[in-house]
Length: 194
Image (cartoon, rainbow, N blue to C red; front, side):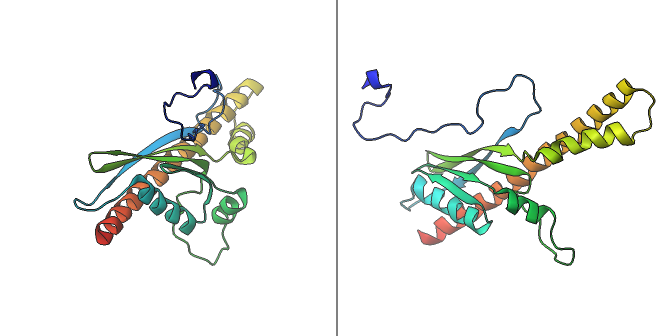
C-alpha cells in the first residue's frame, strides 16, 4: 500500500481532501481564511459526524449555496457568481436580510468529533470578481487629488488595499456569524431528535 502513496492500513477506499486554495502565491492580498464553530452532541443520543454534515448541507441549500462534493465528515461548496451578483445588487424595492455568502466564492467544511463535541472547521475563499478587486485601485488613482503619477499610484494602491482589507474582514465576520448560528441550530435539532 505504501508504494501507492496510501497512508492507511485498511483496505477501504479513502477520500482525499484537497485544499481549494491552490498553490501558494508569494505576494498577494489574502483571499483565504478559516472559520471555526462547534456542535454539541446530545448526552444519550447516537450522533455521528455525518449527521452534523447533513445539517450543514441543508443549511447550505437553504442559503442557495451549491454543495459540490460531500464525504462522511466534510463537504465542499461553491457560490456561483450569478448568485453573488444577484444578492449584491438586488432589486431596489426588495428588502433582504444580509447574506453570509455575498463575499465568499467557495470553500470546504470539515467536522471532527472530540468527547461529544463536534468541531467544525471551514476553509474559505473570498470572492474574486476581478472588477471589484481592481475598481478601488482605479478610483483611488483617478479621484484622489494629488499631483504626480507616483503619488496617484500610491493613492490608488492605498485605497485598493483598504477596500480589499475591509471586504476580507466583513466576509470573515459574516461567515463566522452564520457558522455559529447554524452550529447552534444543529445542536438544538440533534437534541430534539435524541
